Amino acid sequence: MTTPAPLHTLADWRRAYDAGANPRELLGQRLAALGADDPAWIHRCNVDAVMTEVLALPPRSAATPLWGVPFAVKDNIDVAGLPTTAACPAFAYVPARSATVVDRLRAAGAVLLGKTNLDQFATGLVGTRSPYGEVPNSFDPAYASGGSSSGSASVVARGLVPFALGTDTAGSGRVPAGLNNLVGLKPTPGRVPMAGVLPACRTLDVVSVLALTVADAALVTALIEGADDEPRFNATPLQAGWLGRLGQPLRLGVPKASGCDAALGWDRAFDAARERATALGASVVEIDFAPLFEVAQLLYDGPWVAERALVVRALLAAQPEALDATVREVIAAAGRFDAASAFAARYRLEELRAQIAPLWQRLDALMVPTTPTCPTRAAVARAPVARNSELGRYTNFVNLLGLAALAVPSSVPAAGLPFGVTFVAPGGSEAALVDWGQRWEQAGPALLGARLRPANEADRHVSGRPAAAPTLPLAVVGAHLQGMPLHGQLVERGCRLLSRTRSAPAYRLFALPGTTPPKPGLARVRDGEPGHAIELEVYEMPLDAVGGFLALIPPPLGLGSVELADGRWVKGFVCEGAALMDATDISAHGGWRAYLASRA
Image 1 (cartoon, rainbow, N blue to C red):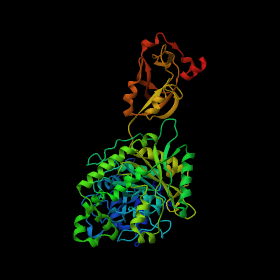
Image 2 (image 1 turned 180 degrees about the vertical axis):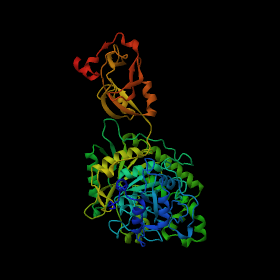
Image 3 (image 1 turned 45 degrees about the vertical axis):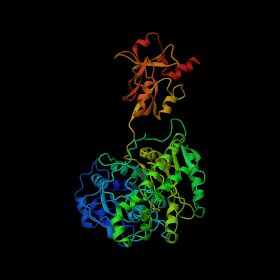
Image 4 (image 1 turned 45 degrees about the horizontal axis):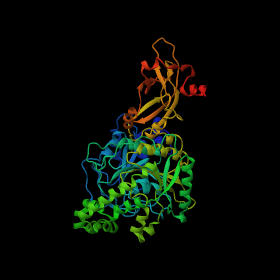
């Protein structure tokens, strides 16, 4: 058998298995290719363990969309029988149970290849704070990889696995994605189960997904999300599956001055990203980031650092030398804070949250540099805290505010290091970010990871999406059509146009007398009576907006069920029969617009 090559994205692995490839052979080859001295790994699974997993795979089916696909997890995520070190050998333990997210991926057919390196205890954004070695940037080893999910980013960027799990508290899943030309999907805190994940800041942590494409990150997130059976510190409702307002440009907030590194060409790269967003139809709005930056300061300069101390306080007291010096310095700062200062910081966070909230009335999302610079590893060694702070400029505020984020590649400037941007949206917007991220991805460079190969259409096919708020398809035939007087009611409720079509040829349309603004009434004919196909538009309305919309509908109109030309039934405007007795039958015009045009 000829092995399909290369195998990078989920589409590649599916195609190989469709062609008859054997997972024992493919995964055996992949294991053999893992270098023994690769600092991206802390633990590589041995051949026997992997083959045991392969033998236990369920039959390949729609229920196993990751069948035979290798993956890796950051080594602060438990895997039963394997040590969890959090990059601290003195802390290591062997869990009896795997993290929920690992169980869900295995149930979908994925096969674990190993556990990856990280900034110790997930405390850092640089990828250098580990006794297992510094993880170099996948484009240039002189530069930092970003962290703390450094190993997970590295193994995906180099094509060793198509996706990996990281964690993200202050940017640990987004920063390494940006610095290695990857997609990093960071869900809203509380959306993903955290059982079996060693906390950094338990109230803020979330598992993140690193992948080569938006489609792959979307599917993996869809498979692991859902945390209703465990304690959560955020209860953010799901948002609609799209960003923006009906018929209006997407409003993207950007910093007035990005502060991007001109020596790397990233200042021009962010300007180009703004131009790309505009070309996609977005309206780019410069905003003041000062309140967001103040929120970010609370994370490391405030009492949240005490959450990190909770995990390691016994080790810190007994063996302080077991901790990386910089990590020890960061965590030891928890001693500066008492309970009163914790409450004071929480009060300030809520004040800032209220100050920031109106921003979302003006904007649909933020577009920021994932990180404004990429330091060399030597520069990190000289000033580890300062370089770390630079990397977190646009990431530290996100989880404190309960927001969702998607880091995506943008360009690779002449200096050679990849530049990425991150889209940040209200909590619960994972599906909407995926929708926009796909548009972004299709409009730009097609380079996968660390120059693996150009992307193709198969790579971008989304086979699974994160959950979104439930919606109701709604057919409108009159004053709510686009350009008509009541269309704004759909705009206000965040609807999305699904299609312009016609009803089944079983209806009659009437001009109702004495209505303001003028409205038609739609009525279904009896079986055997002649009917007409009536022009209509079908919109998707968030379900939680339906009640308020229904209250605005005056008699004799109401919501009922309407059959479309393709045989589907959706909710739509119908009219009471009694009101049609004095109405004018306008069915022959085929729709309300045509009738109004005839009168004009």
